[in-house]
Image (cartoon, rainbow, N blue to C red; front, side, top):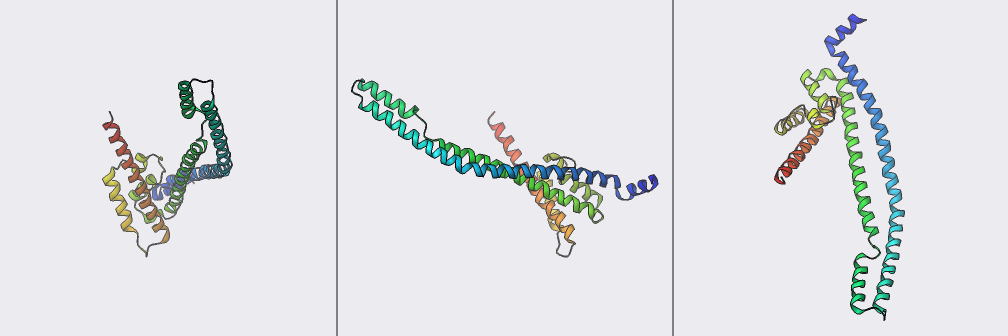
Length: 225
């Protein structure tokens, strides 16, 4: 058995294949758990949003009515010095019962929903990487060893951060590799090969966007120093 394993390792990278499959089965399980949580959180936010917004709207109406009553009382009070009454009315108008709960709550919900949608999109991207990896290992012989290593890194086998996925490449090289994988896509090729190449094009696009954001943020930081 050891001899067979050694020969398989030498011929096909058998150990690497097992490591990749084990690693990504675990990642797939974690992905499904995380995706379920995000979907549940989105549903909860949407469900709570309508009741909370209605409550906030009612609260704002009550606060506006209360503030108006206070202001009316101050303005009509006969015993208060006119200057003090004017100052008190201005104070109540500026710092009286708040009436913007609905707008503040709407902004908070918008931010939360946006963050959850972005997280769900990121999880979807991870899942597409995992599916591409499964195809890659199934048709590994259709790619050169260098291409296999490139794609495994690109699809996150060696780490999720931009540098590991990019395998040390800068923006010009990332653009070159994206163009390379776009060129190799042909209608007559097997579907699995085309799907892997298409995912490579898309993932390089994500890396390029991330790199550009990082460079832009770095430049903005330098300008503000």
